[in-house]
Amino acid sequence: MTQDKATSRRDFLKSSALAGGVLAANMSMLANVHAQDNENPIRVGLIGCGGRGTGAAEQCLRGGRNVRLVAMGDAFRDRAESARTRLRQVEGVGDNVQVTDDNLFIGLNAYQDVLRNCDLAILATPPGFRPTHLRAAVAARKHIFTEKPVAVDGPGFRICMAAFEEANRNRLSIVAGTQRRYQTGYIESMQRIHNGDLGTITSARCYWNQGALWHRARTESMTDLEWQIRNWLYFTWLSGDHICEQHVHNLDVMNWALGNSHPTRCVGLGGRQVRTQPHFGHIFDHFAVDYEYPNGVRVMSMCRQIANCTDNISEAVTGTRGNWTSHEYRITGEREWSFPRRQDNNPYQQEHVALIESIRNNRPINDLKNVAESSLTAVMGRMACYTGQAVTWEQAMNSQQNTMPERLSWDMELPVPPVAVPGTTRIS
Ligand SMILES: NC(=O)c1ccc[n+]([C@@H]2O[C@H](COP(=O)([O-])OP(=O)(O)OC[C@H]3O[C@@H](n4cnc5c(N)ncnc54)[C@H](O)[C@@H]3O)[C@@H](O)[C@H]2O)c1
Image (cartoon, rainbow, N blue to C red; front, top):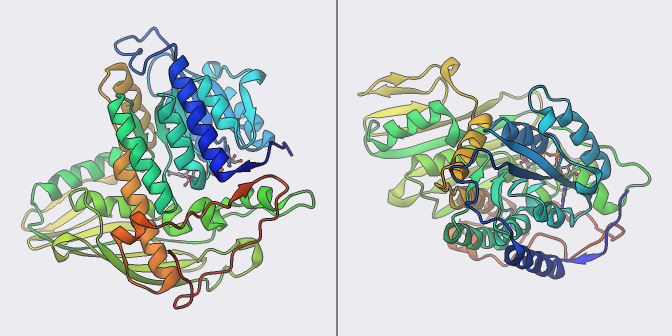
């Protein structure tokens, strides 16, 4: 396993901010240097070379003319090398994968090297690292494609909001992989909902109920940190738990439908009924949250990762004049409407088309506030379910609970935190 230096959380954040500052000062290319210039290649750097990062890199290369992948970084050499091999073989864009050995960076600080070598950064590590990477990428004046979620706790959310403002001041584009906001059926649906086709919205529901997910067996040579990062789904400091990692997609639709607002308060329950073995870390396998939004609107949210149950990944909104469901995108009531799923676009691709166009046309898109608020919506739901207490937006936003372990080094002891127990677990 590749080792890099022991890194305290504060040093980690300080050095990244510093690196960003130096990068910004030394920058030879301004953020909008690509405007109206198809001949000037957009140099892409990939941070986090797993399944989604590899997919996003391919979609980015297909997102517009003259886009090149020039740098890649991952915590682990095997992941970085296999992703580069796969990408080089992709039909149509493999020739645009121009990542030399010198530009293949390994370790927890690989992101800093990638940022030194690109114009556009794809952030696709486990979410726990995202606030640090977002802050460094914005400080280095890079355009960004960021996977969701962007934060797993209150301190991470606050970093994202500062990065959002700084990106706006510097005309940087940030597109988020929440996906549905780039999907035709959802966009058409939201236009109708916002136009009043359902009347006044009174309630909504959202679900991500599915079966079990992958895990990677621990080998003898794996340290605690390597094992946890390779199995990042199962550790709250890395994934935010599945309410954050996965259900954020549906919660994002709720915030969007309700006028890009966010909940004010929530209560919830959840637990770990089936996925109880130690290799599943300490996260829950089911959550149900009752969110309160402005004007008394209630949103019921459910997510579950348990095999052999009824699956449901969808959203629905109820108003005084009609109902909308994302199944076949249908409105029933006074203004009937539907949109066949077969006419939908590929939102994964559209995210990158929009991003590259925004850079070429010098019309920045900045999704970071919306995705940060959707991430915090999930975090407050998790806080309510872990503690059994009602949680307000302010409590979640101002929370001092930094879930990232205090010192990160490959050989550190990193015990698995206890599974949260409602009524007993406390969160500041
Ligand atoms: N939008 C979507 O539909 C969608 C789908 C899947 C995953 N995702 C998101 O994409 C992200 C990645 O998920 P994935 O499925 O690709 O996981 P993955 O495990 O396949 O990939 C994550 C990669 O990041 C690397 N990594 C871990 N810590 C790192 C660090 N500090 N620096 C550099 N590299 C690091 C890992 O070694 C791994 O190669 C997650 O946030 C996930 O929620 C989004």
